[in-house]
Amino acid sequence: MDSVTLDRIDLEILDHLQKNSRMSNADLSRELGMAPSGVLERVKKLEQKGVLIQYTARVNPEAVNQNLLAFIFIKVADGLGCDETDRLLAAIEAVQEVHHITGEDCYLVKIRVASSNELMQLMRTAFRDIPNIISTRTTIVLETVKENQHIVIQRETQDDK
Amino acid sequence: MDSVTLDRIDLEILDHLQKNSRMSNADLSRELGMAPSGVLERVKKLEQKGVLIQYTARVNPEAVNQNLLAFIFIKVADGLGCDETDRLLAAIEAVQEVHHITGEDCYLVKIRVASSNELMQLMRTAFRDIPNIISTRTTIVLETVKENQHIVIQRETQDDK
DNA sequence: TATTTGTGTGAATAATGTTCGGTGAAATAT
DNA sequence: ATATTTCACCGAACATTATTCACACAAATA
Image (tube, rainbow over all chains, first blue to last red; front, side, top):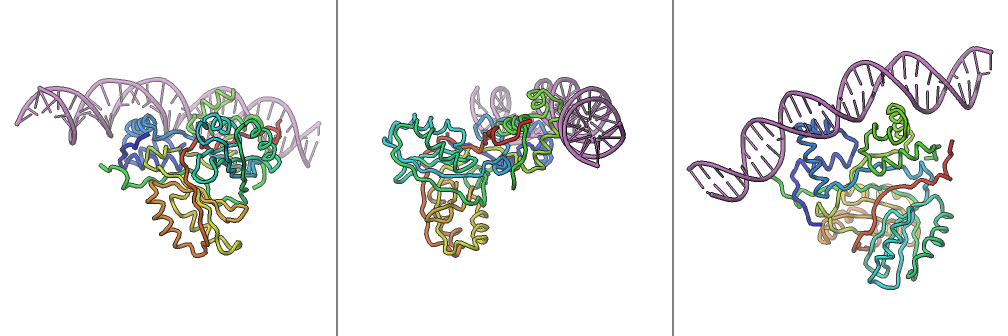
């Protein structure tokens, strides 16, 4: 995906929608001082261009008994041809993130479960199906200070009409 | 935060809104086979209870020139009294996540920037203001296979009317 | 047996979403 | 220089939705 040209209005739209995706078009248009139809067109264009990729609700993990967050580093046998391993890891519902990383290990996996018990079960059952795992290292999160996906877009990197 | 009682309808609402937070109440009500007003009441209650904590739009990082994702492990001097360090780290816009973790290091920080250049600058300037940093270890993400915050809520952990 | 509480309905109304023809400015072609 | 295309936006019209509120019903409680 290559970079896209966004002007100041686009950036404002993105900022607002990242903060509250349920904000109405009408409110957005009032904030931006333009007609609702104009805003709608821009939002649709941002979706088409692949800038806005999803509107999602964040659920408080603790409110729904998902009290354990862990990062697992996984070393697998072959550095190339990891597609199948990618697929298997990504298919696990509790797995929120799968990254290929630099360094000794191949994967960094972020996983959210109810308890350490459930984590153990997952690693025994789900990971058993992944053939080329050599080793895993797990880091448990004791407390989360900040967690969001909000991207503050630097103006310098973008064209500005 | 203690756990909350959610029935099957609540879980369906959460699932739908996590997949698409811009889904209209009307569509939700049709999916669930109940009146829009009833759905609205439930959604508001989920917000009140602190289950639904935010509606957010996800922006494609690559589309806006945020091509570098890194995880930084930070060791700080005193294990206790980290509030100020928490605050300083969380205040950095490029920092998406700050976690206290188990093990040798104290913090795991997820950071998203435009380039390795920007990462270096951040670590020189922003981190300079954090007095008690002993050491940092950085892992660069080569490729992200999966990334979301979607929580699939296990029915067994919840009451079911 | 009364009463309260919680959850939902249905209708009414305010507000929003969405479409579409038209306008003006900037970019491009002639 | 002039015509033409393209683009983003406006504004009005209409379809759809959000939101409120009085009421109903069932379960829990007094």
